[in-house]
View 1 (tube, rainbow, N blue to C red):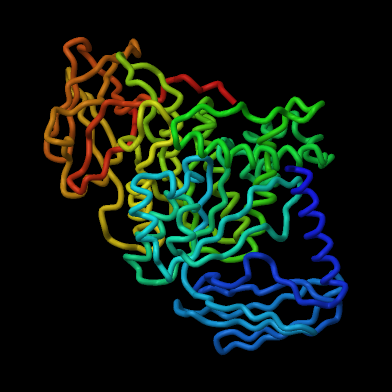
View 2: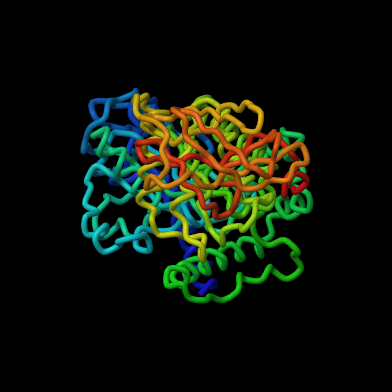
Amino acid sequence: MYSIRRTIIMFAVFVVCNSILSADVLLPSFLWHHMVIQRNADYPVWGWASPGEKITVDFHGQKLSAVTGADSLWKVSLKPMQAGGPFTMTVKGKNTVTLYNILIGDVWVCSGQSNMQWPVKYSANPEVEIAAGNHPKIRLFMVKKAGAADPQKDCSGQWQECTPHTVGEVTGVGYYFVRELEKNLDIPIGLVQSAWGGTDISPWMSRAAITANPDTKYLLDGWEKVIDDKPKEMLLHYEAVSGWFEYCFVQMSRRESYDPFPANPKGFTKGFGAPTWLFNAMIAPLTRFPVTGALWYQGESDSGRGYMYRTLLKTLIKDWRAQWKAENLPFIVVQLANVGQPDKEPVDNGWAETREAELMALELPKTGLAVTLDLGIAEDVHYKNKQDAGRRSALSALHVAYGKDIPYTGPIYKSMTAEGGKIRLTFDHVGGGLTARNNEPLKGFAIAGADKKFVWANAKIEGNEITVSSDKVAEPVAARYAWSSNPVCNLYNKEGLPASTFRTDDWPGATRNKK
């Protein structure tokens, strides 16, 4: 199968090279029929042709020309345009390329690992959702899985109109996210899916960002020779892993067992997850075009180093903003959902520390958080209710990216004071008020004294504050909430949005020294 894939790739390369030699105008995959052009931004239109060839681009009242350089590249820049369409674009050199059904609107990049990759067809109520998936103003672009040692100019993918024939394959979280945005904004929305299950965060970061930060340089340890040598075995391994994931997702959706992860190439102790490789192949080509923002759902593979994930996630956000040359590019994070069995007693927990790291990303401007710790299931990290995950992400985006004055997240811990035998907690984003789901007693709180030994606590809502106490802790100094991989917890605001995992202490936990 993989030899066939190599043959196809080599044939494609031959076609591209031959086309350039024969003077055909060629465009990157991101510029094609059904695409969404980012509104209110200078928009590059570029491609390849014979050196010295004059290229003319005609689109929506703008007619621009360029001359192809010695490197066979040409480029023009469309002036900012308002949302609308559909329109037609003509690109003319010695041949003419006509692109149809183009919209102008907002483009969101949806990236991460398997819970982002998880498609609509394996999410909740697939038959109903797919049948209702006719949204002419939503366009879908799925970046083909690939790895590369150097940043690429182009990626493989194809724009498609959102219909019942196309929506089933696309990311569930991403689709329900953009569907909510389109409903609220009534403008065209482009969903660009660039995700790969099982990946940690380092492959999605640029080499420049990793090496510029003293706290992240270690990510390249043991990898630099692999990256620099660009071994063909690694490229073939990425093809094998890509195929394995397609099969694996089918098995996962059925809750059935699956074959082991493909073995590393012979002679390689590290064969997958090379730092920068996914950024180079699946993100770098996208940064050549303006977008509205990014939706990020990843962290499961980094839960063993939750404390370090504070640095890693912020580094990635800053990196992508630098790569897109957009200092405040809106960035929405989907927080890790619940999974596994509830803890009988309070314990340190790497999954909770990763959620905490995702919460701390809000310290950066123009970031948002979608809390999902009530959507997961005990037996599998891949829960099916991607509808609520997408809807909550959209609420954050409507506020962060579009300035909508709406309740967009659940209660977020603000401050604490110790009052004798109890701790008083205050919150931001209480909305219409704090509440316990189903009007049951509050659950999920723990407190500790100076000995740092946590016990379950009694919690009580008092207006927009909460007091926590336990007869086992005479003088509490710290409190935690939902501090578990699968917490039994029920704090919400009256808009139905759950509170995030939090703690008031900064004591060393399960992952403080893990890299």
